[in-house]
Amino acid sequence: MPDHSAEGPTHKPPHEQAWTQPGATEEPAGARAVRRTRLIQLGIVMAIVAAAIVVIAIATGAGGNPPPRPGSARATMIEQEVSALLAGIPQNADALGNPTAPVTLQWYGDLECPYCREFTLGALPSIIQKWVRGGELRIEYRSMETATHRREVFETQQIAALAAGEQNKLWNYIELFYHEQGEEGSGYVTEGYLQGIASQIPGLDLIQWTGERDNPALATQVATDRQAVHEESFRGTPSFLIGRSTNTMRKIERGSLTNPTSFNEDIEEQLDA
Image (tube, rainbow, N blue to C red):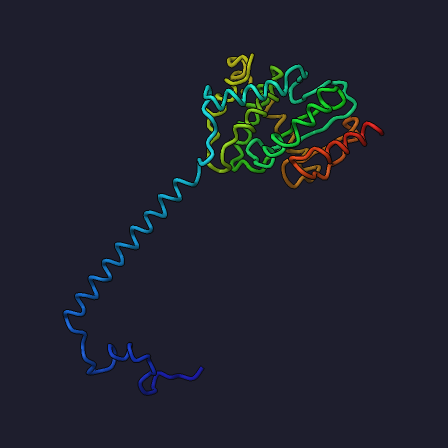
């Protein structure tokens, strides 16, 4: 570019030239005082607006959907709903349904995943009533880390569910967790929250449950699930495998998480096979 350093006066806008050209008339003292007062007032207004924005963000941000308090009316209603859904259906560790059911559905989920909650409250109850309760389908719950932001939290909450499974109550635990799921990323999963879920499960021995959480076999199971996720190249939760035996499992291209129609078609296909 050409060097303009030695050229004459630059062509600044008129309002700038008044303050920079030699001999220009200075701003009167009274005008300066008025201008300074207006700037101060503007700064105060901007600070108040900024503070209001922060308050609104806090009020509407994390914790906007907190889990219900154990023993509250909402928690009791959810507990009754889950108990009614699962009543009379055999459980064994992570499996729900008749051990000799001809078809097995493996569900890979993250307990903090809102899409897994959508499936739990949407299509799943119909699938349980139609196929699991009738003895034709067995569902195995497996873990897959997606929505939980910290690995240690993911493992802790999954082991808590598996510990309930040692008393054949895992499905009670995961159903309650999904029904009472808080806002993703809000840090709602604390030790108190995990214990609160356990305390809502009818017949669960809390002392035994607490001891089972230190069982290294449960941590191994979480690691086994992680390896299976890698081998199947799952991309998100919930993900599903279906088959008549563990040797014939195939992926389900999930459709609606609230409408069970596509799941029903896959189950019928396996039964016909």
